Image 1 (cartoon, rainbow, N blue to C red):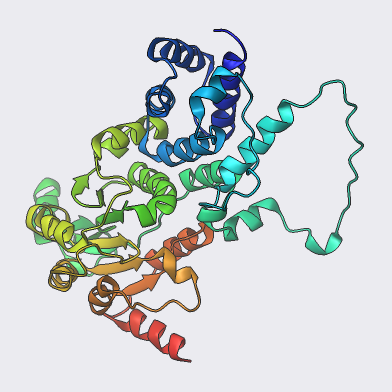
Image 2 (cartoon, rainbow, N blue to C red):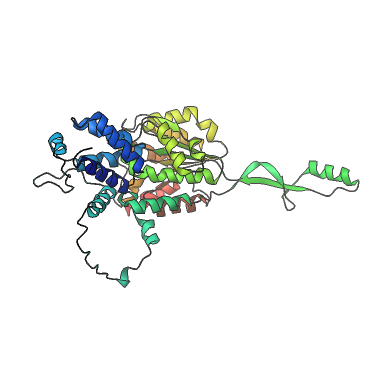
Length: 404
């Protein structure tokens, strides 16, 4: 490949890899061959050629799209690439500020730009200052950091911490009984069998109801407004699914998808790759009422038995303006033991459920909690380990706190 086009494409691939995309030497070679085959006469051809090689998961699309348009910024792409000039990362003078560059991409481009500097220049001596007043541990700071504002390294650390999470759901008594020498009920059948075996007077055998954690159903919104949180939530769903039995996971945007079996693979990367290939409505619109109607019609009787707990993860923004949502939420609420709404917008102190979707959801939930950082996920485990509040008690308490 003549000129500096090879250098430019390698620089672009290195930037994407620093931003978190799994790009190795093999993919770089494939990209170079693809560009040689397709050519660079059209900007769209170059975009989709590199996209087909570098992107293999839905959550990688926003990073690639933003990186491409920032990297190859000049609209006269053909003349620029024919000149084989290394593209400038900075914003051109006089250009209006567009969409804010994500923190992951900004860090990656700064790192890549630093790698391409003058090797002969002597590194400046770095001055280190320590402030004893701000000596919090990185882990403590990470617990409070918002998923939306995390860097690449922080996101990777958060994913590793989420994978080690456990969800101690409180055990509940079932209708079945188990032998218990201190049980409150006498097991007549076991008593008679013991007396027949011994041939003597019967020794009373006792039993108590078996205790078992209820089924856990997770219904997560993957629309565009939830995309930055659904990535971490998927890791959380995988950890919970592999930690205990009777966990059922669903994703919804414009349609409902059951991903329970896909998440049962022990390797989180393999599991999420399967989910990405199966789910077709990533980062699109939201039809909450329509998707809940499908859940209630096809899945509620299968997964909501034996006092199931439902985690409904969404920001409440509905493309259908709440059409049929209140009816379906009421049906879902009556079908489960406990319904908890996890909303990332609750991280704002001034948040109020003003959208039509949020207003339809509020009357039919048992608890209302944020889900925007690791601390909120840890608090969720503590909530599920205790007896649930009476219906609407948690929401009423939340509304009272807001009024104060």
